[in-house]
Length: 215
Image 1 (cartoon, one colour):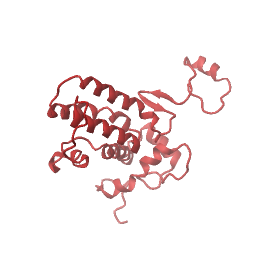
Image 2 (cartoon, helix red, strand yellow):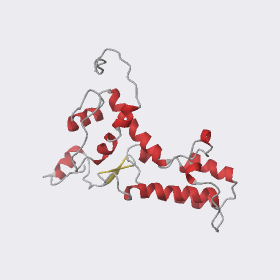
Image 3 (cartoon, one colour):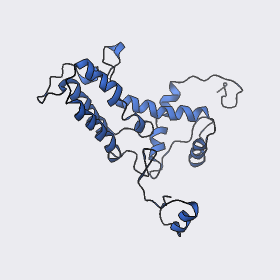
Image 4 (cartoon, one colour):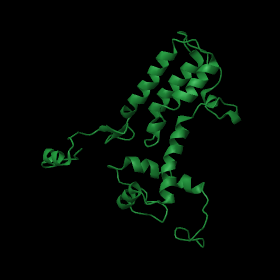
């Protein structure tokens, strides 16, 4: 049980419910609970995991192809769980890009390796001449948009009903834009992407409950 502000008899309530009293911020299902969504500190665990992987790999002699495979299959996957809910701050992107870039070009060498291609090109898709290493900013944005897509498709799940009750529907697809400064930073950052999602989506009319085609 994590009380917000002052809660009377919280220990007694926790005993009745068979739980314990904790303090925020805390970790729940591997994600920070009650922390600022744009705080760099909540990403420290992800950065540490990447650095530990890197330290282990540096003891091995790997070709560039091998290093590229490890980046794509391991390093790119580590921040995905966090990015599925929290937008990645620029400082974290910069740090993770530095880790991946250094490992790609330098490997286990102590001396600085030559960066033969601009990082912007490296993180482009293979169809565009890149190496397919994920662009973390684009991946973070896509994962945030996924929540908007789920919400707009409206299965009336519990989290959707909570969002709707707190932020009020603007139309039949999305809540009103979040303008209040406190306690809503996570949904605000997601909601701010709605115009981009809407402008790149098509609506297929079925029973007309959510679509008015004459407007």
